[in-house]
Length: 301
Image (cartoon, rainbow, N blue to C red; front, side, top):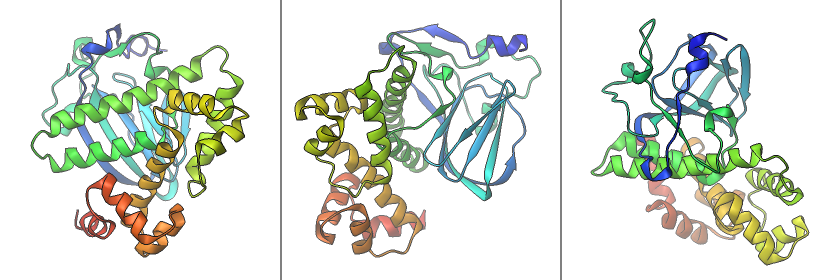
């Protein structure tokens, strides 16, 4: 490992009260199969795989990310991203810093184009107990709520309404907390049996979101009381089971409205809703507009 690879990312102990992320880039990307040029970046990148398979190579190790996973790319570290799937891979990319400590005027400012840039030019990765550094892990499987926050952040950054900087900062903090909680669980010396079961159950929710995920059903799967199961679930995800699965359904509703021509009624059925009116009412509650309006707007944008 070279000296510069040992130097980056620059980590410092900084309390959460000082974390103030700024967003430098947030956009959907469709990349054809193949590897991009190796590079270093001044900030950090989250590269979420919407569809297909992606990879990044860091320090000679290739890390694969499947659909529904994201790659965490640290500042200053040489890496090479790759769209693995044929004919293309659909990404959502977010470039950010944790502390509003670097200035980016345009996209070209993100990529290092100097042979020996000063360490002070790179964004710092703050760490604070009880969480490990996010860069200790390359591949994450973000919960549905985290993906929804990334989508909202990308929409805010693209539209840039009044106050978008503050909204993006708030959403990024939500995203970071969710990833930190997941990272902590992974690096615990001995995760409990209940936590392992809970992670499997959450993975099942991601694909079988049409089931009736009540507190009672979750408790039965874990072999715990309803109150204890709900408490563990909230500790891990930040939401009760019914609210968590609702974020998955809403994420899938947005995707189906954008990417398919299925009727609103058929989409509601696939998501597990009893009727079109109930689905439409819930969608408007979360999104602020009706499903038909969202479909029209997404295709204009």
